[in-house]
Length: 414
Image 1 (cartoon, rainbow, N blue to C red):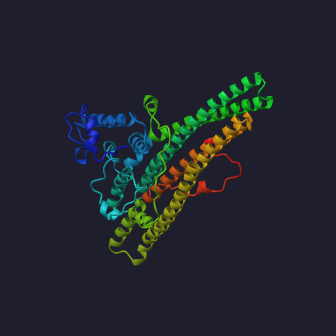
Image 2: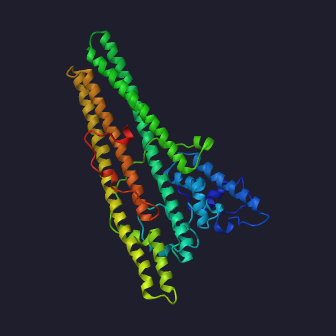
Image 3: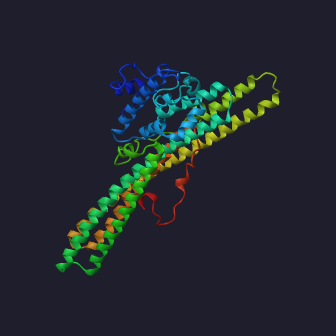
């Protein structure tokens, strides 16, 4: 997805609707005032609608899902209001940092290839109200946590929806292949070249494939609905959402752990807020020395938590990448080679139709495990993003790495 570096590009999309505007920037956002309010609100609504149309006209990316959530989700309206972010400003949050935000002070020039400009821009808008207040206000920090929970949940919902869609497509292909196999064994049975047990087993494989396809279809529909909810879409706009057919390819190289803890401590929003509260407390006149203990302790605790979350998230990220690579680059090709050898045996009259059916079941498992492992990796990547951003509640990063019972099926395969 080509990224939009400034909101000037957004404006160009809506030029036909708003020929009198020049660009979207903090200075050009309509300010609430008597008289021009209706005109300015209509102008802003036209530009926002143009951007939403642009996002809905192409397959939905993960960043596009988050941007739509920021633009549309009614659940975020109250949070933005608590931070003093006007409805007219929601269009800016994803595309440029708050101009009042000192990025150098927060980031210190550090970079990580897992960072996303959208998350960094949004974080700057969330940080400014609290940093300017020079206090760790409860309502503001609650609002920031709520926005973080919502936007990162939208990222995870996108991963699950695409994985479910990919699993559905494969389940449908398997069902069609099973139907062909059943028809073939029935004809062979009529010719006397297939045993009754092979015919029954081919029918059983078809029945199982149909059940798997039905479950996969329902699962894909439910995951899509969850994603639509996080984005705040319904009706005809929900119908316009185009999901990609498959998850992105695994990265060629993984993000290393070097410098991640320092990066998190410098840029995490919760750490910035705690440092601002400590500075405000230290500058307070007439305060006894004992009064500074609590802000310092809060900052120290955030530092402990930040380091732990980043380490845990990176461990899960690296492990899930290794598992996904093995499942997709070793497990699937191995199943394909076994299938090719089994077909040779069948052509040489050394294997039965049942042997082919049993081998097909193994191929189904291999591909399903590949898709599930890819989804687990991309979910771990979102966890690492959130650990670096320090916004909202981070799920237990290593939860999906708990040992599974023998012969247990992955949720995406049900």
